[in-house]
Length: 71
Image (tube, rainbow, N blue to C red; front, side):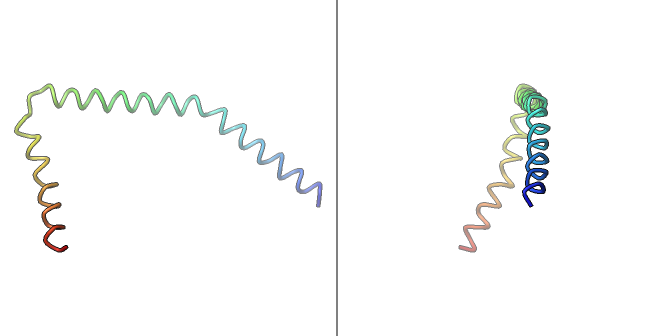
């Protein structure tokens, strides 16, 4: 039983080592995604689509008012 526990412990240690080995890559990819999203938001806000912004907010306002009516 002790040998089996040792093998399981080695398996867990190996998996943790593999996960921690990949963490820098994952963090870098997440930062790239965040940078891309920020750039897209800047582009949409700088294009002067001010009429589009209230149109996007209007469905949310309607959804909020529909929940208020049922409450």
